Image 1 (spheres, rainbow, N blue to C red):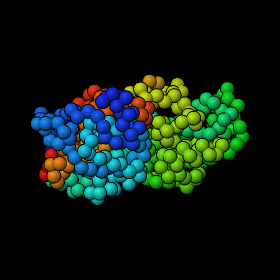
Image 2 (cartoon, helix red, strand yellow):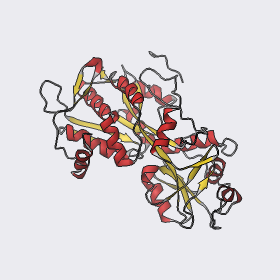
Image 3 (cartoon, rainbow, N blue to C red):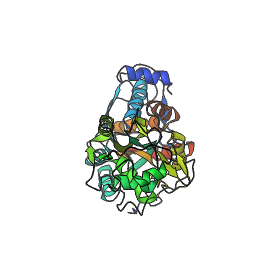
Length: 377
């Protein structure tokens, strides 16, 4: 829907050290981040001449962001020892629900606010509005447990038919056509999908709907659209289920694929392995959603790309926040938090922890303009 509103480290050692201290604060006192109207929001609780940050900052949502979130929290709390940042990785849908209800200060979500969520979130953020800020880019891996097949290749139509229960054995002719040199077993395929509403599911089904429209009869959705296969809660549940049974296949944030097999995906005429760079490239070359309000940055990923330098099954995950908070202290903490997360240092910390791709300088500049809109209502 188009809205009627005013219409783009603190050192790795310090971050990892803070992680080892279980997010306990100890370190630098002198970080500042850009604030609104060219001013500064002081991110240090003890620096003189600025706003001291203290208290709690509460978030919830995307489990895909969890590893990066740990690094972001550690780095932020290292610079701001009087601020405690809590984050519950309950899944994107749960995170958006908690944010809309006012139970959290921000949300992590692998899908942007949409439909009636926008109006409900705007009501929560009144007199300001809600905004989606894309801060986490990661490939979604097709993970599988088939020890006899080390280099699986899959075309979009084959992937769609596997996940729609139309291809049910590993030696199906379609899989053989994608893997002419592989020795494929006759074992049954056990498809595993998310049981909870998930932004990862939304991104994956969006890929299937765009890249394999003749083989995938469903629209993009955060809820799994068919009844076949097994289900599992959260990213960790998916990985545990696939690890636990031979013949399984699923989709998950690539940062958590671990030792599982990961399929190459056909892009144009080439089978492409996921990389952070290939995920970042498709995001950089995809168009923005121009129907969104000022400050609300949503990217429409080009899943149909034929460019072999792109990996189209990508998760672009957002931090969701308000442009207006009830008090200045909360506004300052949220502004400082988002500035750290989207900063070059924050992005490097998240990338080292999770294998995600840092956002581009151009996107960072646009995100900072949105962050600068945050104030106390």
